Amino acid sequence: MSELQALIFDVDGTLADTERDGHRVAFNRAFAEAGLDWDWTTSLYGELLAITGGKERIRFYLEQYLPDFEPATDLDSFIANLHAAKSKYYHSVLAEGAIPLRPGVERLLKEAREQDVRLAIATTTTPSNVTTLLEQTLGSDSPSWFEVIAAGDIVPAKKPAPDIYQYALQEMNLQAQDCLAFEDSHHGLTSASQIGLKTVVTVNDYTQDQDFTGAILVLSDFGEPNQPFKVLAGDAGDKSYLDMALAHRLLTSQG
Ligand code: XBP
Ligand code: MG
Image (tube, rainbow, N blue to C red; front, top):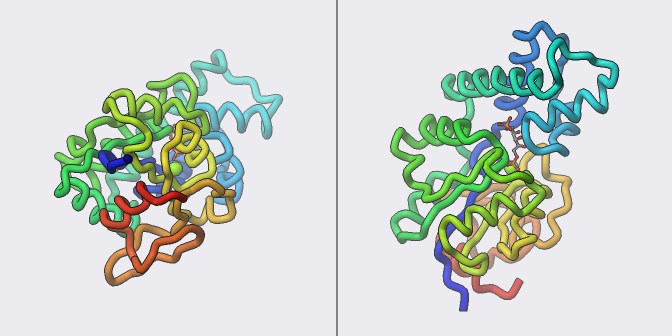
């Protein structure tokens, strides 16, 4: 019998809408600083999100859109330097306080903590991006709420590979059947569900048209008591926001 022991969260798009006004803006600032006239518009960025990982995304962009580009240094160092600048700018965007948590995220995290349900992060982004986002939105001690922050290059293969979720489970010494995952994208759902994690998806503008077959529940967002979610697929019973009672029920349901 499964018993809910941990919630494992994706970060970008799930905890906060960081992509369009956070990562994208930071990439563009890094390009400008490097004297590059590249402009990742909101629509182009939507296409580039097919590739997870910022360094991987830059490499893909060069291959697909600028195949004749010749960097001044070798390609790996060029990308690494550009990405380091991007991370610096991303932190400054977060410090501006422009990116709030999505509806219901803070409430759900706090409710899980009250019930001693363990928390973890499984994300593709750089580790310091996660801690900065948490500190900025939930306070300086909030990274410690998470037993494991599995992030970035800690595993060889990024999402949609399952490695990052596998890593988080191993670190917590838990089985997939005792945890729920939270994602916003098809790649994230693929990563979590490949190793048997039941997954709740909350969509956003970039992901709303993706295929979420296999998700236990697909929602507009986690919702709040005064701000009900929309159920896009699956069964939330009589609930209008995601709380721990619904989380427990989802884990033990047959779906
Ligand atoms: C997040 C990503 C990341 C961020 C950029 O995917 O794809 O690449 O866009 O982060 P997910 P870095 O939400 O599925 O984890 O530049 O730090 O790699
Ligand atoms: Mg995501």
